[in-house]
Amino acid sequence: MGTVAKTLKLLNYLSAFSPEIGLSEFARLSGYDKASTHRRLSELVKAGFLEQDPTTKAYRLGAAIPRLALVREQTFPASASAMKALDRLFAAVQETVHVSIVQGTAGLSALAHIDDQTHGNRVYIEPADMLPYHATASGLVVMAYADDAFRDQVLAEPLSQITDDTSTQAEVLQVDFEDIRRTGFGRSEGGYETGIYGISAPLFDRNGTCCGAVAVATPKSRLTEQAEASILAGLSQAATDITVAWGGSIPAAVQEAWMQTKGN
Amino acid sequence: MGTVAKTLKLLNYLSAFSPEIGLSEFARLSGYDKASTHRRLSELVKAGFLEQDPTTKAYRLGAAIPRLALVREQTFPASASAMKALDRLFAAVQETVHVSIVQGTAGLSALAHIDDQTHGNRVYIEPADMLPYHATASGLVVMAYADDAFRDQVLAEPLSQITDDTSTQAEVLQVDFEDIRRTGFGRSEGGYETGIYGISAPLFDRNGTCCGAVAVATPKSRLTEQAEASILAGLSQAATDITVAWGGSIPAAVQEAWMQTKGN
DNA sequence: CCAGTTGGTCCAAATAATGAACCGTTAGGA
DNA sequence: TCCTAACGGTTCATTATTTGGACCAACTGG
Image 1 (tube, chains in turn yellow, blue, green, cyan):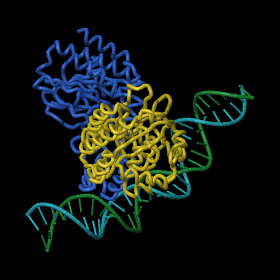
Image 2 (tube, each protein chain N blue to C red; image 1 turned 90 degrees about the vertical axis):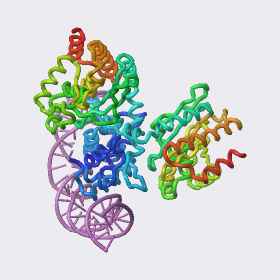
Image 3 (cartoon, chains in turn brown, blue, purple, orange; image 1 turned 30 degrees about the vertical axis):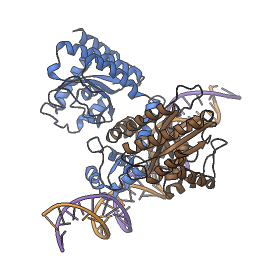
């Protein structure tokens, strides 16, 4: 692994749950010594990717981040266009919805979300949280439409048991992937949070690669047949809208799968 | 310069004007050979900071960027809180307004902006664009309140002549800085764009460091005495609001300077 | 068909990263 | 009060990585 990769990996330890981390903690998390870790952190600070609290000495994400995000969003308004489609989807299903994008083999991260505010029993999405591929509807649908090399790489690493219902065996997941490819929708029943049912549809970039997913999360109790039909229709519409807005197109195989599934 | 710094510098060549750059162009811009540049770009792609168009082979900002931006914005909602203050400022002055933050010695970058839509003759802000310290009202006010080491570092590099009215002599700027510290407001008359008058106020972080600026840009023709008084009042209010929202506070010296200036 | 461009690769030489041991400081406990 | 253990940070001989000239294949315009 190159020096740059080791250095940038440090940024991944920062999250909404631990937005500030000190030197020793970084060293422990990364498995490197304090000297190397300190030099790496200093370089990230110099580049504006981190900034250091002068009193607590802890490191947090720096000013270069929002700048680069603006450049990307202005060039390629992924977030804005996703939000428009999410608005429509939310209006149709009245449940928590979100769009997430592939972050290498590490997982998916939520790019945009609308939280259900109407029901008492609702699902929250933690934005910028890394979602595991094997335990979420979004992750499963991305895996199902990813190329073999990517899938093998993800499955090669140990799959964490997040809830009692998480599938951690590659063989079981392979069967799930076939189901997903047949229906065009990903599903996860309590694999990430107990009692939460997730349904997802894949997003494709201009190269035809599956680069993310749009998903609805709902307590299983509210998932009537009628609600599910509305969710499936909304998801395929949203996935198409977002994919087109991103310059891609839905593969014919996926469109056919959707037609068949919704026809039932 | 460390390998990481050289690698991350590549990201700075991407902007709203050239959102995609190829290998040879990167090598030319960075002054390094193609072999090293290629390895660096590949590492950034692996880390998700860049992605490569498989047909044109050009590199653009990757999916890791929006994720980190969300983490930062969720931890520390700089953009959201700035936007609230900008809304009020815009309502008061009815001219193009923006908030920009320090990006090391490279310049300032716009974090949020509201463009004037009402007038025929209006000023546009290019978000995520790097604003030079010596040629903008925002840059000048930051320089005036920066520590000597930072100011010397910026002035040590050659100052580009952007318009005919740009001041490029350090001695002239030093006088400007004294004016700014006396009034509490930065000013630039056509230094960045001919005919545009900029007025700015400094923002301070929790360490008391000047970390950005809020500014109003207007055609000089609309800058009546009355309009200017309204702008100065709006700017000091907005600067205070944003600084407080960011966990900082306006130094007493700046508050006094504002009082005196507005009292005239 | 050539000259000049593009993206990308190879490998010996040059350079930068590494980490055990170290320092100064702070915080808590006996 | 002392003692211990944590913290952030630094030093420097050892070690591993980066570097860049030369090279290749592919494409483009004359």
